[in-house]
Figure 1: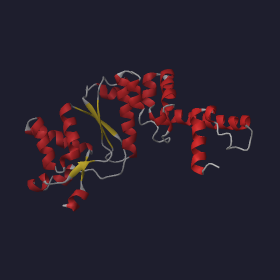
Figure 2: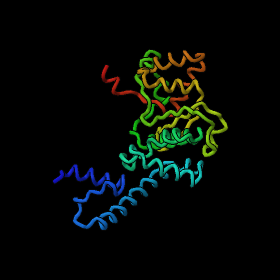
Figure 3: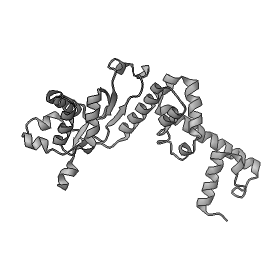
Figure 4: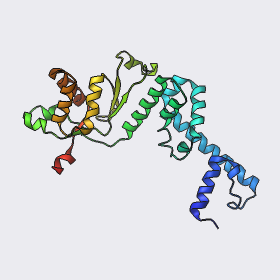
Length: 247
């Protein structure tokens, strides 16, 4: 007799791959009745997966149109890696799938943006570093201040013109978008190439002084300070308490 794990694997394989993998010795009912039940269950799962994709990408749905979006979604959920995902994570590879399917760059970027929005929404809570926290401290203390990106920060470098679904951002012709959640609300900021490069450097900077050094390498002092202040005001940075305690 197969083990529970083996029986579960055979059951899942039948749901995913169809009657050809029907586990004949797993059910007390005859084959026809068992297949009928499995078909209903598989259809329910398939519908739930398609609904999850649609809910994860509402702007992309409108950008592509209903028919094209659902045709692509159906092909995507049949991929092995998508079948292995739970409902919350099933949309993670959709942007890469669209790129491989030669969808237009605006659609691919929009998928990346919408998934980054979801990641930001689901990320850990953290108190962002505020300008008021650094306003009164001495220069040496400021330069030594341990920093890290906010857990909700996501950066998307654009590869094509922005979709009209993001019309409010199209006017700025950004190089990248920064998604942040400093408090309860998720915000999207258009970034120039210079600010995006500074934001990327937050990952390994360790201190405010290191980040300012990176910023100065990209431009004049006044502009560098302005770019760093913009990131702080946006809520993209936190005081890295763990790093401070390790020192």
